[in-house]
Structure formats: structure tokens, C-alpha cells
Amino acid sequence: MFSARTDKQCFFMCLAASQLLFILLLYRRGAASAFRGIFGGSPEWDYSKTQDVYTNLSLFIPDHRTVRAQYCPVSSPILVGPLTITFTETPSLKKIQLKNRYVTSGGYFSPRHCFGRYRTAVIIPHRNRESHLRTLLYYLHPFLQRQQLHYAIFVVHQAGNATFNRAKLLNIGVREALRYDDWDCLILHDVDLVPENDHNLYICDEYYPKHLSSAMDKFQYSLPYWAYFGGVSAVTPDQFMKINGFPNTYWGWGGEDDDIAMRIRLSGLSITRTPLSLGRYKMIPHDRDSGNEENSHRYTQLRNTRKNWRDDGMNSLEFHLLSREKTPLYTNITADIGDAPATPTEATKWRIF
Image (cartoon, rainbow, N blue to C red; front, side, top):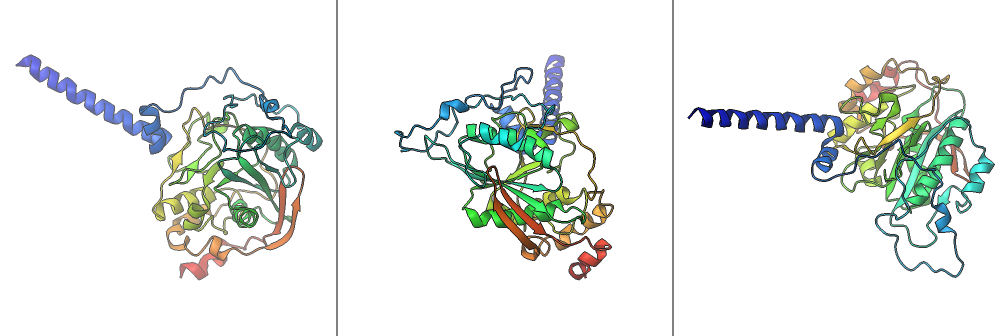
């Protein structure tokens, strides 16, 4: 009798402990990542053993006698896993070009031995970060080539000296990128984040927006909070339009990532995340640049997201396109996006009331 009661108590204690562990996994990794980890997901990588980012690219030297006749394998055979990432020297554009000889004008690349299964556009908002951009391009081009993607890189440059607006630049980048190709996936990529593992595939989840940079060194390789969607993310064009893109009214640093996370939930979608052991990124060290000061109004704006998200986004995007230029390593989009309003109320009152 006593033994049966003890066994029953142990059973319920174990059940409660397992439920607690499951909840913690959901919190730390996101639901999709937790399920992958529990039911045979990604391996735990050894980041003390890294490979040069240009490893294996020599295997893809084009042979003029070779005719592409089939799609690339689902899993690229030349991925190496953890990468050696250093920021001691900023590479020159010429060096990057020489090491990426088969990237064509505009930052386009297609595998030479097979047809790429996925068409990916990488969109990078930018202003006065030339050294960061060169560092990212140095690592990102071979990273994407080993994944055997058909891809292009779009850099969206904000002209002038007005307050920086990352969200609006991303909206512009999406609109312009879709003029060039029928992309399967849009990668929204901060210029100062470099991926550390080439098994972190730059392809989209068919059903939900995907957060790629789940473990940044800035946050000790952990997710800072449950709803975080900053850094690097992947969305299909349909997903991006369903959430009406980013808000156009966040000027300066902060808030727009939380806004888009709310838009995802409000539109009936959810966020899937790359597992922490795979979604690792190094941030290029830097100080806050002039013109990107903290947005002190972001909390007020976030309180109005539920009211405003259907009216502030891709369907209200206004800008003046100054140029489209195909450089050897990327397509440069330069836009005048106007000036920040004196107060956020001036930008939003027509939608709130």
C-alpha cells in the first residue's frame, strides 16, 4: 500500500518535472526549435573547431563541358559547419571580388553544376557602415554559395543625414528586390551580424516567419526574450505582405523588431526559430552611429501596433528612389526616405483617431 502510494507520488513528480522542462525549452528556443531538439533535431556543434569560410569552394570551379541537368541536392554536400570569424582586418572590395569570382553583377550567384532549389534575396539596410558591409560580404558570399542557393544581395542605402529608419529601408528593399526576380525567400539582415555556421540555411519556413539569429554573442548566445525577432530573419514574400511588412514610422534605434513580432501574431502567424546551437552570430564591434539614436517614443508606438499595423507598412510606403546600381558584389538601392517627424503623434494621429 505504502509502496504503491510512493510510486504514484514519484510518477506525478516526474510528470510535473517533465512539463516544466518542456515549458523551459519552449521559452528558450521557441516551439518549433523545441520540438526539433526533443525529437531528434540538430546536433550540438563544437565551436572550438572551426573551418575557413572559403573551404570547399574550389570544388565548384566551372567546367565548360559540364551541362547542368538536375537540381542541387536538398542538403549541400560541401557544408562545413562552424566557421572561423575574425574582425581584425577589414577586407577590401577587390579582395572579396577575387575570392568570389563567380558572383556576377548585382551580387547574383547561381550554382554552376546544378540548378539551385531556392531563390533567396538578402536585404541589408545601410548607411555609413562601409567597413561593416565589406566584412559581411566577405563572409556571406561563400556562406551562401556552399548552401548552393540561387541568390542576390541587395543593400538599401539611406541618403542624407536624417535619423536612420531601418524598418522603412527593409520595406524599400523588399519592394525593389521583387522587381528583379520571383524570390522564394527574403532574408532581412543587419549589416553588423555574421553567421557562424553554414548549416544555418538561408531559406524560409513554408508556413511561418523564421528567426535566424537566435543566439548572438551580444546576448551570450541566448535569446534575450521570448518575442525577440531582431538581427536576421527569413520571410516569404507572401508572409511579408500578410503582416504588411515593417512599420514606416520607427525612426532611430529600437522598437521595430518588437512591432513586427506583434504583427506576426496579429496576422495569425507565429515565429519559428533556428535552434540556439545553430543560430549563432558574431556582432562586429562598434559604437552607436550618429543619426541612429535611441527611439524614445518606441514604447508609445508599440502600444498602438494593434490599431495601426494594417495601415502602416508596405501599403503606405513612400520614398524617392535616387538610384539602382549593380556593383560587382551587390545591388545598391539608394533612397531618400524623408525626415523623422517632430513627434511620433504627427506621424500616427491620422491612423489612431
